[in-house]
Image (cartoon, rainbow, N blue to C red; front, side, top):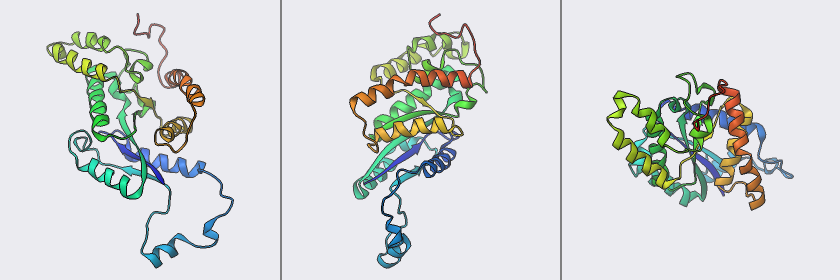
Length: 253
């Protein structure tokens, strides 16, 4: 059985950088130490030559897909290819959907990212993880209106509607915005984890989450409860590391 990730997301969200960093991380940690190494007896290249097999001898795959988002929430071509690979090669894949974290600084763009994430989840029909990538650059395009957990947990979106109502350019779309937010909240499927691809701890936390969704690592109910209890702490730690402190930084005020 082969496990892997289908890495998707809009242009500029960091997919290729993610695949490069993830590949380096997985090679660094190694999945296990073998008691008997079959390469002492036979080489993969020999089998490939003799039996016309190959070229990949690994048991973990990273698929770096292009940034044309319509391939993953509208068109069936990419989904069809992935499903055929899953069936033919007995793959266990997780869709890793990257969204640039700076979109959180703009309420309208954030809602668009939520809609894209939801549509992709429903269309792809794979275990799915939404990731706010480039979290280390999250405030480069402006300060966030709310705490980071508001965006990762996709909390009460009516607060975003209030922000948009203050802008004359978006206030005229108030009814449409409300309907879109209602759709997102009715499904209640979208949330985000965060990632700084240069931070080994951040990558490790994401790998653990991915491994659980595709079954690479099986955790019991008690273990899962312990891990999920750490999520709030993790988000708070990310906010403390990458975002400027503000005593009034609370969406409940």
